[in-house]
Length: 529
Ligand SMILES: O=C[C@H](O)COP(=O)(O)O
Image (tube, rainbow, N blue to C red; front, side):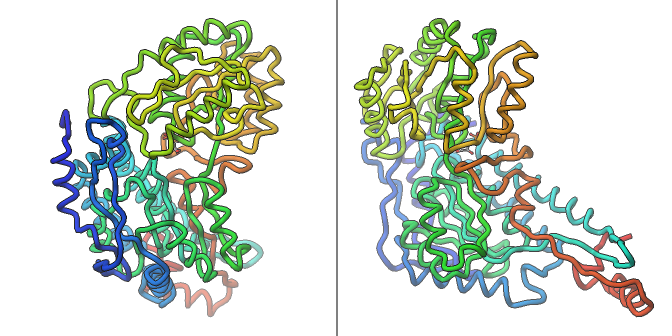
């Protein structure tokens, strides 16, 4: 693992990328219009102020509609193209892509650090986790296909049931996991036989351009179309046509709702959405505080709290509140701030110029309404960074109680009756995960049952997280639509479809011939009988 990266090295990578290229209908096309500068997140520090890493095309309606036409063409042209292609051939395309992607590991990781400020270990983890996700998806897809080889028979009717694609998928990924979360949508959508239009987020976008050629050379034309620009300029015109079958987005519900509203037949639209969350930690009086504090540090502050799964409010029982606040605050102040490649760094620059100002607003609002900053460094500004603030007591009238802060600020609420956090969770607009810290099984057991009906994942004595990627990733209320995971995503991007036939002489003969001919995925699978 390289120990350091430098601006010249980052610029060398970006200068080798042909930054004015986009992918439509199997062609890497040259963009001749306006561009937008990509400024490094590390620019928020004085040392690297205003480092321009490159630029990306500022596309609009014309390119968006060309990409849509290409995706529709690749889906609709019938026999032999992507949706009807033999499963093993589709798998070969995906294997070819992932192999080419693996060759780009070092460059992609460096751009993750420079573009979004993710620490070096976490950047490698994001890349490796994504590659593993693709291989696991391929394996799971093979298994799905193998299982579908079995015929059903009920009341004299045979059925061969498979999973088929839904159509055209518009895929929009987030800046905090520009590779992993985007590909957690894109890869299952593609492998299931859908065709796609993908637009990366505004941060973490150059690293996608590193992979354009791998996409172009691995998949038939029109299967993957990649555009750049603002969501409003690119995604909205596509939605307005009403020709998108799936909106796949990880981001905020405001964008998801706005796009959904553009679709004239939104009742036909499948939604695969990963949205906001306000995951709480609940600390019971008998919790192991050493473990709890470590888990809460990771849960609240990994990648500066810029994770939808981050712990965004801590409920601590009154009996252990003082000790928790003291020790937790000391640990927060002992974390190391620095550039992503610095050894042992836990806090890194924030990507959006407005983010530290927003955190400051939340902090000022809470302080004006009676909360105190419990850690010595809390709220200090250094360059464009704001040091994590541990806030107590936080009350319902404060903005930080309600809003998904998605950054380094930690609201703490104390309770004496467990009904208090449970009522808050029941009233919340969100329902993704919870972390529960405690030991007594007779207290934990009924609580786990209750919590499991309020959120979709209860983490016992551990922080909230999405992975391992084989586990379901979803949420209740405004937190999600559909489920992601290696296994679930294949189902989220497909529909069950089948061929049925009555048991008669003509059919018996026809089926035998179809099985023999092996020309379609139906009634002729390689694994059948
Ligand atoms: O932004 C939300 C991500 O899904 C969080 O994923 P993670 O728990 O793996 O960091």
